Structures are given as structure tokens and as C-alpha cells.
Image 1 (cartoon, one colour):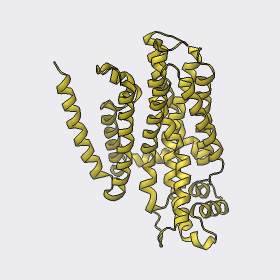
Image 2 (cartoon, one colour):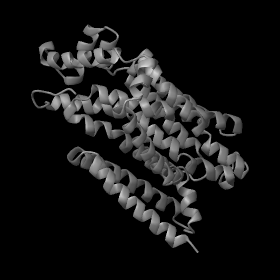
Image 3 (cartoon, one colour):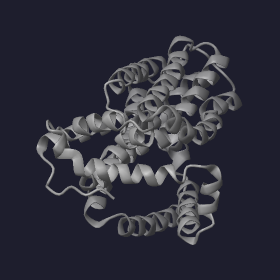
Image 4 (cartoon, one colour):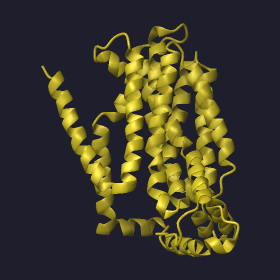
Length: 348
């Protein structure tokens, strides 16, 4: 753990927040990818004058992203370890840009719509690892919790944005695709200006570049201002180099302090997904329609997305004060009670 001896200055805080926002534009793209079926499916099923398909084909167009996401997620770690965090982020934005380009330029080809959604899913898988890893490695410990929790907040913002486009253009997904393409290309350009992770540079023996990167991240004009923190990074990089082989990783996973948290977190995320949150995000508009609500479908879906976005920002603030365990327990209990109420209300 890296600790600053003195409080962070305004410049250092501003730099780290700005850098983290650029890195987490990828997670905003995640939200847009997940919420995009609310923009894509209604026109495909006949609400517009463009491509019309069957219900099964529309369902594939909505869900094919989840074929590309797991594969890309498994590859993300080795990729950023090999080429670096910044290049990994750029690859992520290139993947997103390719997917959105196909959706925007070829809206009448179902095959290319499938391919565009598949590439978007690959970008989603890459972003799930890359943005959080980069943010955690460049952030000072006093800001780390807040900046790392930017990921879910930015994803919620992405869902809200794509729902907004769905409400404005109810018979076409092209406009939303071009908007997302513009964000992807802009993010790619901005990412090229980011400093590389000092921890990754040190793990590759590039100490001088690591020092320069850390100076940029902390807004320091004198190398002596970040020397102590760089020494801490060096210690972490040395420890990481000793445990990077697959054999050592599997050996470490046999230890209770490794497999117990891993098992607990995977069970926790499993229950989170089984709560139906992914389906609700993917098919927000259809969800409202199937609930029997007519007339203000898109407005209600937007309200749900806005509530999710605001609650995510609230959670970010709460976690910075109370840590993660207590908010996790409280929100878990509340979610369980609300799901039980919904279940009882719709059960005959």
C-alpha cells in the first residue's frame, strides 16, 4: 500500500481525477453497449423504416455481445501485462470504435449488425479489466477508493445516455451509434496522452520512465517530491515479478487467503447477476412495456436509468466514508426485500 506523507495538492488531485475519467470512458461505453438493445430492438421489430427482423434475430442482435465479452475479459489481463496499460486502453477503444462503426454505417445488414455487437462485446470484456487496473495503479491511496468506484458510476451514466438517445430517436439506432463512435475515437486520442502506469514501467525495468510518469500523475516539478512513493512502487513491482508465472499463481490460489476471497466475490457477483440487473439494463424499454405501462415508456425507462446513475454516485460517496463492506450488506438486504416484494406482487 502506498501512503502519501503529505495531503495531496489540488493539482495532483485534479490530474488523477482527469486521467481516471479518460480511462473510465471505456466503462461508460460498457453502459452504452449494455443499454443499446433498448435503442436497437424496437426498430428491428418494425418501429422504423429500416431493417426488420424476427424476434429471434433481434434477440441475437441484443445478446450476442455476451459471446465476445467473456473471451476478451480473459485475454485482457495478459494483454495489458504484455503491452502496457495505456496501449491496452487504446486497443479497447479501437475495438469499441470498430463495433460502433459497423452499427452506424451498415444498419441494413443483419450480419454486420451482429458483427458490430460482437466487437462491442469484446470491448466490454476488455474494459472490465483494463480501466480498473489502470486506475488502481495510478491513484494515490487517499483517492483510490473514490476513483476505482468511478467504473460503475460511469457505466450507469452510459446506460442513461443510450436510453436518452433511444427516447429521442425511437425508430433508428444509427444516431446513437455515431455518437458512441465519436466518444470512442475521442477517447482513443485522449488515451494516447495519458502517462503509462509507473508500476508497469518498473516491472519492465524502465525506472526513468516510471519516475517521469509519476511526476506527471502527481503534478510534481521536482523528482524528489515523488521519490518515496516511487520506492514503494518499486517494492510492489519487485514482489509482482516474483509471482507472475502461471505456476506460482496456481500455487498461491491454494492458500486460504487467496481462494476464500476469490470464491466469496464470485458468489457475490453471481447473485448480483441472478438478481436480473443485466436483463433490466439490456431491455429497459421492453421491460417497461411488458409491465403493462403504455404512453410514457421511454420516459419511465430514462427515470430508471437516472435513478441507477444517481444511486451509483451516492454509493461512491458512501464507500469513501464507510468502506465497502457495510454498504454492500445494506444494499444487499434492501435489494433482496424489494425483489421479494416484486415477486409477490406479480405472482397469481
